Picture 1 (cartoon, protein in one colour):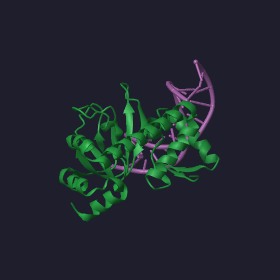
Picture 2: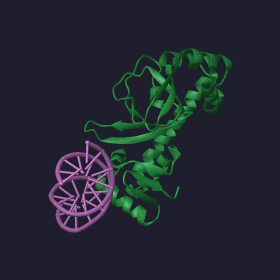
Picture 3: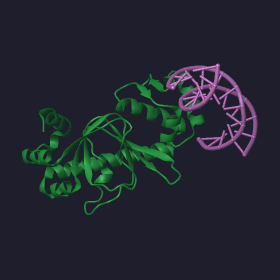
Picture 4: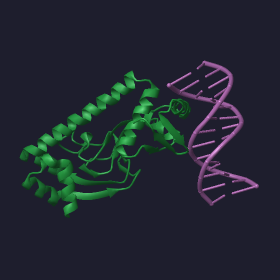
Length: 214
DNA sequence: ACATTAAGTGATT
DNA sequence: AATCACTTAATGT
């Protein structure tokens, strides 16, 4: 494994850097690159690995039978996906869909290793627990947002989050996509965006929205 | 020039 | 806030 990957691990996952654990990660992990919009794992697929995000961002969403979707949270470098850690024994099927938000580089850790390391390495255990906690907090934030915020507040929050994740104040998306992510209709999004533009919060063009007030 | 897709609007529930 | 029906604007071939 080359040095840039090791450096990256050190930057984002510093606290789980124990010599032996690092050696094991080198030995067992597979480097994977996915490009934007690629589906990393889909509903019902068997989970055989857990990802450590090195570069990029991944969006995690839920979908019901009628193909309505709802964004749960984003995961960034330094994160792992909690849904894949929920069951430590046996194989489980994914309850969520993970899509590359941008071009993303990650390390895939086989689920068996994950289980072995849980008891073998204290750093690994606390990393997983902490990550699980973070994911839960983000989920709570999303729930709050759905329960207590009106659609216009949800929309601007989403745009800001997205701008942050992409490290770019210009969010490249369509009104329809936003409607899908927030599980509302395109017309509603169009009208709310217009209001936001009039109040100077954003500026829009076809296929992109510039968030002025981050 | 034409077809396709994105975005805007008014009316209704 | 959702849905419908329709218009207008932008973009690809």
